[in-house]
Length: 306
Image (tube, rainbow, N blue to C red):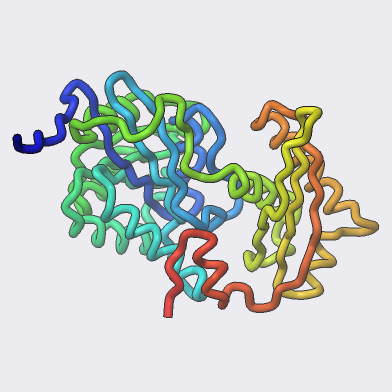
């Protein structure tokens, strides 16, 4: 008796969609809108997404895995190079690529370089002009035409990830475009990001929102303790690692006010996410040159650039 080949349920679809583009194009906001839940941090600052975060949604017969990649920019440091490498790798591994452009900013020289590279990748490609609610309509057509000339997109969408305008059309196109195949995850699966890592990302987001431009991006948060208590609450202990003593003082704030405010913001969001009371304990440690430690890159899911 011969082994029978695996049978693919042709009534269903499954595939990966990579969202790429410049920092602050709105990728994290869009991915949260598509899955109708928060799985990626959103701030007004650029380069806040460091790892390729996977999130999932189900749309009719299709299960789509979204890859929220780090923003593509001109790398200057080792961490920058790792992030840009992760973004392009996510694009090359995906079934569909969605290139996001901040319509307010138009096409920068870096965008044009990235679009030229994107044209060399043999994948279905969608263009999404984001933040259209902040731009005059006549500007969008010229922007779309220029981008299509450089990269040859299969479809173009005008969207606002913040308001949801046009997002449903993009979502339907992605759902139609992924290959036929069986689902790989349960229907209610939202993200591959472990809760410990998601909790750390939420705290990092609150730090970025609070410290403004005072603190460099050489900052990371790690969840070291997670205790589900008998009363239904969760005790979470996290460490904020900074590169210098001066940075530790910034995060601490005057009489500890900054760290208290960050803790309160993060605790409230974590409690809402988990559906349980959260006891959050934050500690600040100086870890010099952590951006040159290969182990830290592995924890972020990044390749360590040599």
